[in-house]
Image (cartoon, rainbow, N blue to C red; front, top):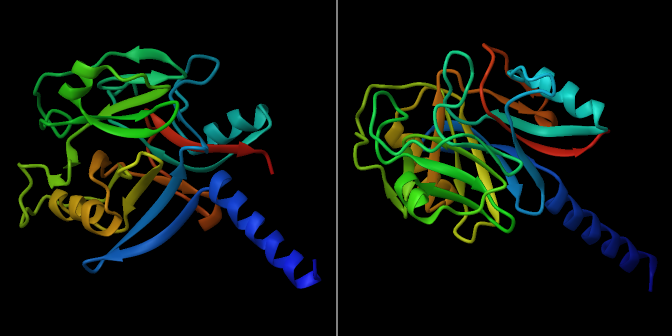
Length: 247
């Protein structure tokens, strides 16, 4: 085999490995609004985090990185991943490493979380899923990790029925959408204030995700190592992060 062929083969292997093991965070523009998108493959080590070994909420990207470093690991990207009470306990279902920490809430209620339909982001053994809450209650899928939030942004390709295109309720928002085959999850944060309708259209029209879930607004934050981004703010509740070996 010639040197050129060997070089091309090595490049293919390198690119293939990167596609499986690393996050890809990039800036996109949709309808004139900027967003940052971080992708995870189901073969990646994507986890949810809530409490440190001492029982206190992790709360910050800095503390998450420190905890993982103690185990010889690092985090490629991380994002707040669901709504929480003042003590940073999850509002709805939360499952971490197969253990249910907080139960599913199926009733309608105040605020964005209770804007039915809401849903659950599930990290299963073979696929990612975003499942509407009452469907989740009926099916009870096996999730290694799960976090409930609301409202749903996209439901089987349709926008949430209560979203208004001209709504003046605008915040920096973040959420997650899942590919149709469940092999990829897209974690998105807006770079400016957007309403629910435009945020949901970005998932449906720009990313092509048939199901997407809102995580939060106003408190939305992202850590993305490859972009040199580390958002600051008040301590968070649940955090989603892509884990890899320490540098």
